[in-house]
Length: 431
Image 1 (cartoon, helix red, strand yellow):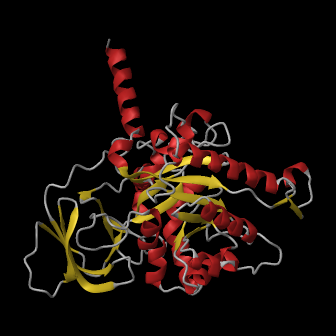
Image 2 (image 1 turned 60 degrees about the vertical axis):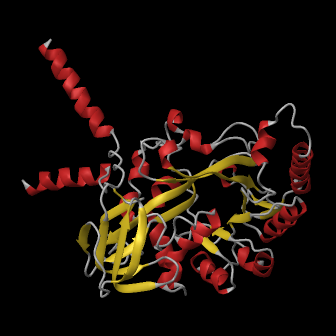
Image 3 (image 1 turned 180 degrees about the vertical axis):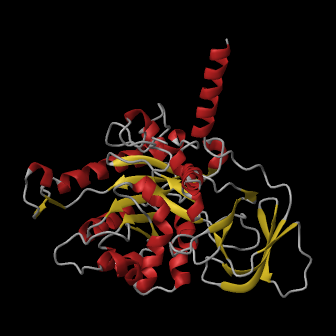
């Protein structure tokens, strides 16, 4: 029995070490943060600022010089910076834990047309990858499925919750469509030349989409008996309650996708990726279509592109008047999501101001996702989802969080990595 008790205790300690940090309880007392430089996310900055929040909502934003009674616990943040929580759109956080372990991978489903697949159902709030985002200021994400022609439905969550129901900020916000590629390159792993060639099935693949959406339009005006789950999921695209996110990079694909969306009477559309969006800025502006721009830290796609095109694309689009946010899909995208603020920081070196760059991962993204009424900027009445950094949060050298709050809750910034850092720091300190 003694050996059994020791074994059980060992297992308990092991499992507790595997668990995520316990979600913070609901805000029970007010906070006043004063003395910091306040980056509001909407382009405005307040130096020596005062921000107060209670019951999960921001109650005051202004100068610390104002004679106003401070509420609750006062946090002295002189010399520090306060930012709205960063938002990671088009993310598979919580859908895959270990790429090499198939049982932990739930990012896509079998089949081509899956608008009814709801990514939020598979979202794992206990993910160690998810909790590792928070120390860099990423406090919210759009959980997005992958695969197929229509991948499914995304939802927007905050990253400190017991379960997906608690995490929800906006449920089933939009449908994700992977637009057919008009051109492709040879597959290097099969020894094919990497030259650009025409996709001879492009017209057929586009026509399949047209037929699918035409059938949906007919269904929506019928008695809907029997119910068709894929078509039920598309309900909301024409009245604007859902957004169509079209994943497409090439100029022709972007143009054709916009024509398609207009023909199908889709009210809200977003281009995701948009590598050649700078070639169709007038079309994007004319149709009020924003862009969630591909990973900034990328190589050029084409041999005749400028070597620094991925770095300066955001600047070109912003200067052209297009609403832009940043996304980070691609290789090792989940663990690389923590680098989102540094992608925004790179755009500063290529023409944007720091506040414009900040908006790419806060207010602009919130507007694109349709949640700017509650998050994305530090304004009275919005969620108190924010953090305090010792320095510039867009610079990896000075992005050092001392406090973070989600809906007013004082959340933990501990992760598996910080625990290991402390453990081994003590080990080598004692040698």
